Amino acid sequence: MAHQGAMTGVLRETLGQLVAPGWRRPALLLFAFISLTSAGVVADQAGQADRFGILFAVSGLVRLAAVWLLSVALLRIGAGSARPAYLPDGAFWLHGLLSFIPVAVALAFQLALPPEWPIGGAFANIATLPLAAWFVAAAVENPLAWKPMPWLANLGAWLLPVLVWSLLLVFPIIVLHAWLTVRIGGMTLGASWWLILIDAALSTLGALLSLALGLAAYRRVAKD
Image 1 (cartoon, one colour):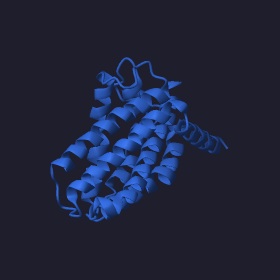
Image 2 (cartoon, helix red, strand yellow):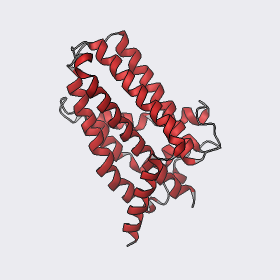
Image 3 (cartoon, helix red, strand yellow):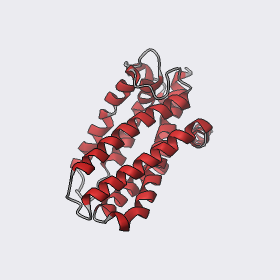
């Protein structure tokens, strides 16, 4: 019964966070940046998936910066942090530094997978879940939460439900996003704009779910 209550509690909290008023504007901005940068990549490639020009590079850098800034803002708003939502302070840079951990794990998984299955990020999302509370704390806490151990305590209070909902909700979205990315890669902008919007919506939803689950983990450690 305790596990069932924890499962239900995490799901209710996660879904409630998705529709929280403070998340609406940054979520729409995230969707807009993902859509526009995806369109930039497709326009640059012009139907040739192996072509990488200036517009491709600029779009990639803009997306990276936008997702980073908006992710930190969403976490700070969701956690009720005293840190200004959009301020690139020390916690912002710490969170960015820690983001290299799942990126490295994703690359490691991808090396073990066939090239036509670009789903290393889906496995990295699951593999790094024990660090979820620390990733959030790094962005929102004051002073800096640079020590991981306090945020690895009490895993039993949240890891199982966050793992289950990540597998059921986030993992399939990341896999579908990877499939759409491959499909869009060989298309022109005129032929793929509707797929770009669908992919951007899925990517935004996956990011928001992942952030909301991370906040659920963070709250269960921070209150102890």
